Image 1 (spheres, rainbow, N blue to C red):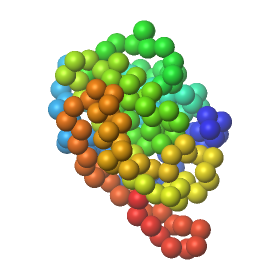
Image 2: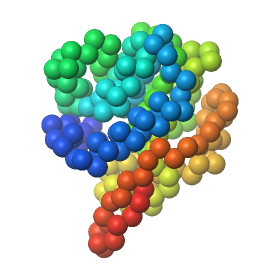
Image 3: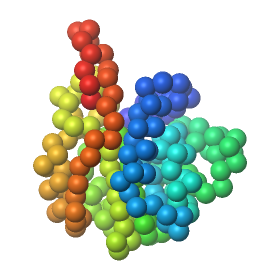
Length: 197
C-alpha cells in the first residue's frame, strides 16, 4: 500500500475533489477542536499536507507524520515553497516507537484509519502520545461496502460503524467521544451511479 501512495504522490493534489474534501475536513476540525497557538499537533497520515497546511496557523507546531516518503517529499517541497516554519514532516507509523515524540495537545487524522489493520493498537497509541486533557479528531468513512476505493487492496476496512468506533476509542481510554459530519464526497461507481460518501 505504501508503494501505491509513493507512486500517487506527485499528482495527489491535482484532484479537485480531494482539495475540496481537505477544505471541508480542515474547516470542521478547526470548528470542533479548541485550538490555540500554544499547542503542539500531530497530523497522522498527513500525505501531502492538505490538512496540516490549513491548520498550522491555529497552533504552535505540527508534526506531520506519514509512512510514504513520496508524500512527505511533496509536503517538504510545499513547506519550502510557502516558507512554513512550523510544520515538521516525519516518517512514522503507528507501530513505530514513540519515545522521541512529544506529548501532543491535539492529534488529527484524515482518511487514514481505514488503511490501518489494527485499529485497536492505533487507538491505544494515540492515547499514549496524547497529553492529559488533549484532543483528537479522526475523520474517516462511514461503512461503505468497499465502494469508496473500489480496489480492496487499497483499504484494510470498508469504512466504520460509528457505534463500534466509539467503543474502540472508549476502550482505549478516551472520554467524550462525539461524531460530526465533516464533509460529503460524491464518487462514481463502476455501474455508472454516483454515490455520496
